[in-house]
Image 1 (tube, helix red, strand yellow):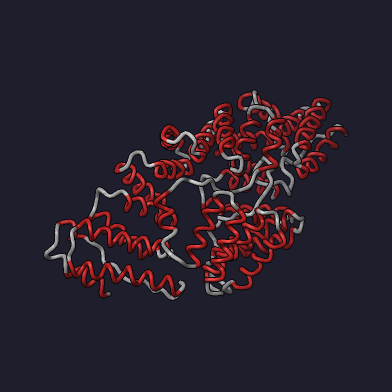
Image 2 (image 1 turned 60 degrees about the vertical axis):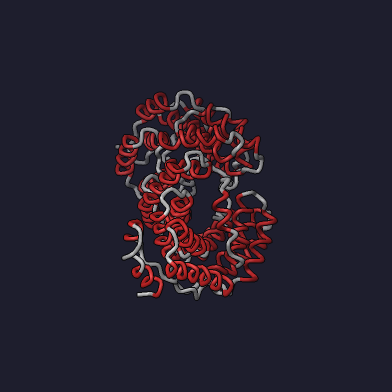
Length: 541
């Protein structure tokens, strides 16, 4: 038993009832962190040791436990920090900070059920805490619990009407409910407050497409970047600044990324790289994030250099998040530049170094389909669905691969099942209509049923995806003149939006319709699993 664990037990016999269930606390192995961080963690540990020996009040002892947990969490020793927070929470049950930090710790570990419990406890103690409202709202939204998420975002918006992340939450909930008018209002308001909130352009474009306003969707398609929105969070900022180390500069850089200040982020990551020891997880993480910042600044070559440094420092095998993300980033860049073979290699390494990396499995599945390895692609989409059972792209990719493997009947049955299980996810109905219109299997093809699906579910929509599917249905029914007109209209709209890859793909079907031939391929091998083509950026999270 460790020294502090022994002291903890020693004071229980003569302590208050709250102390009788305290968890043992130990000093973790600090070999992987900078010497300065080691000193800071040991100092907090010694402070707690002395406090246990002196037997202070419950409130004072809670603060010592909590502060020890904070420094451990800041240094990413999550497992060691957890019992410290639980003890602080038990000793000072009215203090909101401890369940709040505990919730963020669970969120970092991917333990969403525990995170939800702790966020709710923090919110019960401080019902108007803006950050807690938004984080808990996001957690509910990510789980598809729109009815639980919406009131949290609404309250955050009422408390702080100019908070972009609250408006964004309301906009995304509205979009998920196909309330396109409401989504446009919230997302436009958010962008008016923060024109650099680049991640909002994708949902806003989807909302405009849902309204049939393709011209308004076009500029947003070109401006989208995959970045998280900043959540005003003073408690998290307090923790981020605890350490003067490579890790603290990494956290500051992440804050700068969230604020869209790419230049400052790059400087923080550079300073962190100078402090961090080479060939460590922290060093690799800093180089990857520096590459991400450089990429967002438009310097792709410099970004690639940083990603390659990560790969050179990578362990030969095992789990390594930064290495996985570096391979993923290089794979995305290669895919954008048409270097499919190289992209496949990097994405294979990404999923090997981080098997639960959802985006990497999806991108790897897409890349495998492009080179005709459909059975392997099927496995990647299946793995993605295991990681996130609510992932629409994972299920769509799976069914697309089934079709390419000449298993159209199985694909149809899957889409019917998904459409019934998830009636709010219109993508499944649209995918089913495409398959019924253009299946290569005569026994599956049913263009009249496909037309009925479009008329029932997409009557008022004018999105490119719906238009392309409608053209397939018309051609399958022998109305080639209308199919040509619809296909040309869709191609003209997406060409103005700069979606050149989709234009080239649709030109193949247009040629068929002009020759009075129906389409017998609902998806091309190089078609991404998301039906809308969006500009792709590397992930910096």
